[in-house]
Length: 106
Image 1 (cartoon, rainbow, N blue to C red):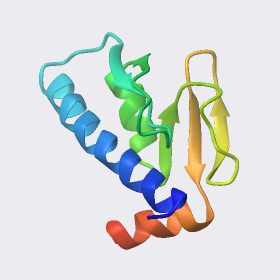
Image 2: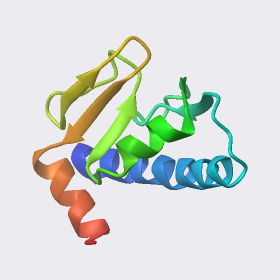
Image 3: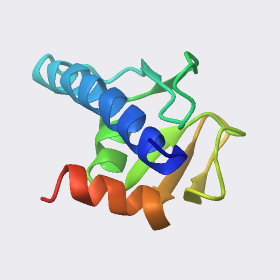
């Protein structure tokens, strides 16, 4: 498995878990920030970022976008499209984007 494929798979696993957390937060009307795992391509990363369920939902509605800790981005796999103090939003490019498309052709 190459790095783009590994990165895409890792990020999709974390995304799936976080979506379930987000769905529960919305169901229970949670508005305060919750801890979400960094969605970077490092499978050993365990860092968390604090994000409101609404903000998380805004980002994940864009299929190829992920939230990660500043400094965890990989220019070979993603483009930073939004920066703030707590997290960056990246959009997958190239092979990483193609891998997401193959794994989940919506």
